[in-house]
Image (cartoon, rainbow, N blue to C red; front, side):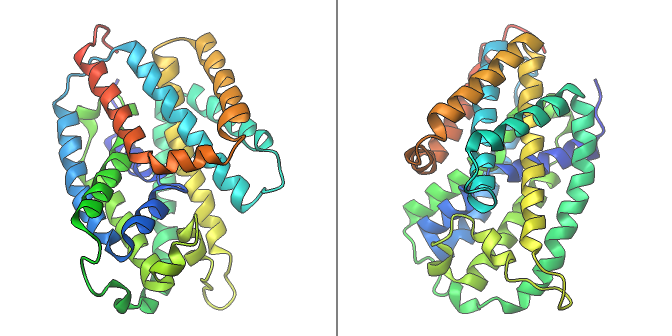
Length: 318
């Protein structure tokens, strides 16, 4: 099956950003503060290398491993979406009321097929870029350059660790996309990295490192300060919706992959299992969020290893 490359790379760009929800940005800022921008640049270089390796891998996959890493990514992403919605908007609503509609919607979108997911991504990517750039022009003049001086205040080890974390966060979603070698354009990855880099600069330059470290969603808080033309406010809510759309793309691709290597019955059983795990384990105790935050880079690196194993031990051509 051939895909429209613009649609395909739009989906790559959005999915590359999605795993930053609630963990990626705050984790890096809490670790190296004003040096975060350095880790994004280094991480982008590492990410480009990882993507290059992806293009050299065979198209074959092992169905069992595809099922495993797709299920893990879907569970992780649903967990992050639920935490975002519960923390910002529905903090008194039971988590199960939040994620059940999400699972139903993702199941519906994935059943429409990959071309529907890709076409939706193209539309969202245009809106996403526009919504991001307009308020950024309002925040850019307020950036305090002193927040970035002096340079290299963090030790090299922490900067390298955060660079690897960014590389893993931004490239892991790509393993969900079939025919990557034929359709990947490095410019989509660069675009997503530039957007992330700008966000880091805006957050630290406007909030300052110490204040930014206090928030789980510093990007949400910095957009909250925007008022366009004196009457357009609550820009941060539009930003949240765009975050959710990015996560829907990733979750839909993961769900599509589960169905692609199994069948509808197994997919439904998997979604029910994920519902049980989310409701009775992960969302039951805040300590699991702390664990995932602490070991986020390791978790994503492990998923990449599963992906590589699926290529090495592939028997079924998908």
